[in-house]
Image 1 (spheres, rainbow, N blue to C red):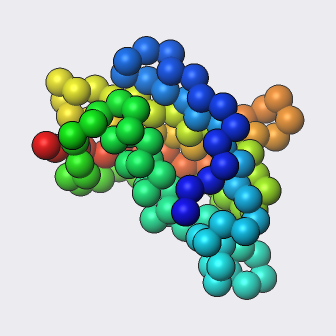
Image 2: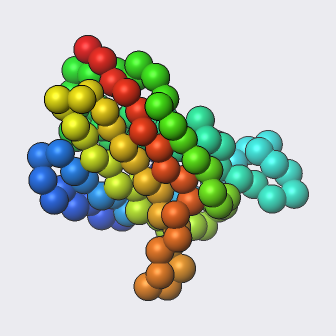
Amino acid sequence: MKPREIERHQTSPEQVSIVLCLDPTLFWFQGHFNVQPLLPGVAQLDWVMHYTSELLAPGFRFHSIQNIKFQSPLIPGNILTLTLTWQEAKQTLTFCYQRHNGEARHTASSGKIRLCR
């Protein structure tokens, strides 16, 4: 289940930013965790790969994670921006989720993924 997309900005053929809303009814929040639902890292990676294969690197698939950092939890109701940057020559994708707090943006997670054909 994907988040609700609010808007999308493709600044170049190699970069796109997508503003997303984390609807509290998303499947990913069920049972993760009961006291305070959190968006699992596997969901974040699933969305990264979904938008990458759709918008930046069709025909490429996941190979490996070069690095990943989860800095801040994403919870139901958050608005966030996912920025994807594709370097085809290196077959490397970088991603960053930034949580919105009014006009401010705070990095929630980021990483680098290697793709292959």
